Length: 142
Image (tube, rainbow, N blue to C red):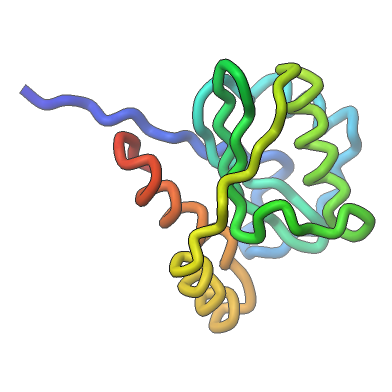
């Protein structure tokens, strides 16, 4: 008898481009709509437009907190291209009324992802988060 392994879904906010870059602008209203209709309890990988790029990270909505894994941790400039990212995290906090905590960055996975980022001029965040998920959420598949 086979046992099914739960899948961590990938939720895409905004249109998924064929490359790592995106010029899609998300208003807070459309972000809220997408957010409210797709985000649920449990782990999920988020693919979010942060013009001119797209960014992938993991969120895990638990009973007492919201956990985030991101290859740069929480070290993003909230005044630059990361407005949609921070708006999204704010909406998570507002919807679930739970504190947001960031996992520590895995140095080896970060170095591997940075190599991918350098060679392909993008995709480091996705490389990091999928490898990170395999390592730290072994009871799931992605």
